[in-house]
Length: 131
Image 1 (cartoon, rainbow, N blue to C red):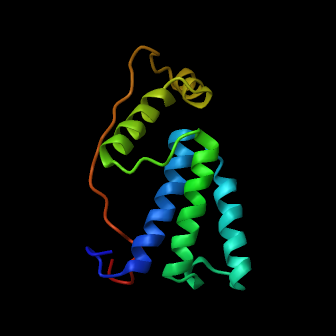
Image 2: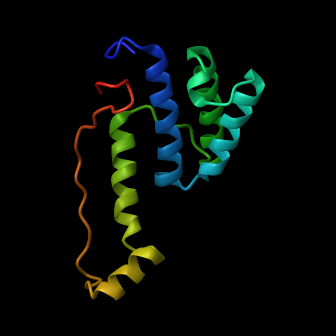
């Protein structure tokens, strides 16, 4: 919130991160997060995510952390290095999933080649027309 001067944006980015991290890295179903978000919007009587204010998003984050805990058996990690390591490990694990194996077979990519991970800073594209 300090970096952007926009607490609502920060809480929205955080809830999106929890959802994506939970889904992609730990396999917590995206639909569980979506259902919770839909319930929050319904309770407030709004249709769009953008109609939720900062306090609403704080409550969504709390609910998302509970979904993460229920789905993984662990609290959502707050340490960025722990988050990064978990994301990296998920990429390496993905090498063996069915979709990757099928793709390699179709494209004649050797199974012993391995995969790489690139880490880069992200920029926000949802802070307004000039972001």
